[in-house]
Amino acid sequence: MGIWDVMVIIFIVVVVAGLAIYFLNRWASRKMVEQSSLIERNKQSASIYVIDKKRDRIQNANFPKAVQEQVPRWNKIMKMYLVKAKVGPQIMTLMCDKDVFNALPLKKTIKVDLAGIYIVSMKGMKTKEEMRALRRGGGGGLPWYRRLIGR
Image 1 (cartoon, helix red, strand yellow):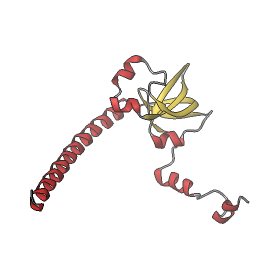
Image 2 (cartoon, one colour):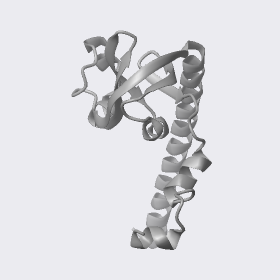
Image 3 (cartoon, helix red, strand yellow):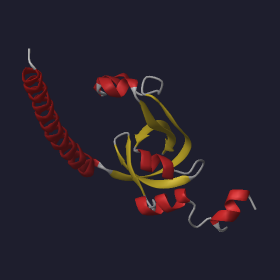
Image 4 (cartoon, one colour):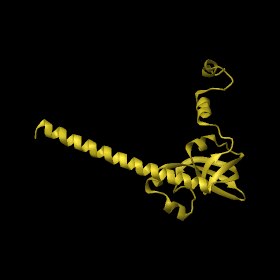
């Protein structure tokens, strides 16, 4: 085998991998649009009292057996953002997105949009830009050099 044969094989492998990634991306984006429209149709406003929030596997949460069976296989091994909250008279475990998880306050009653057991958004939640500014230290009251030395 010459160098050109190896180059042709590598080129073919790269083209096949590129096509596979392209078609998987199209399939995933179609599925994401379909699921987001389903969430938008089924979301309801509710007032919840947040008891606890943590990242854990779905098997360790007390979800019903039917919910655990519907979760994709790769999500079963990943840690998810789980919130234990009192919704009406019931104490439930809910799932949410990372941004919503970071914005949820503990031991407070808040208004959220729920789609089944998924927290879609929180009323009065800060935008991504405001959260980024808070992480960078903006609006802390002290100048950045004072916050470094703790005074």
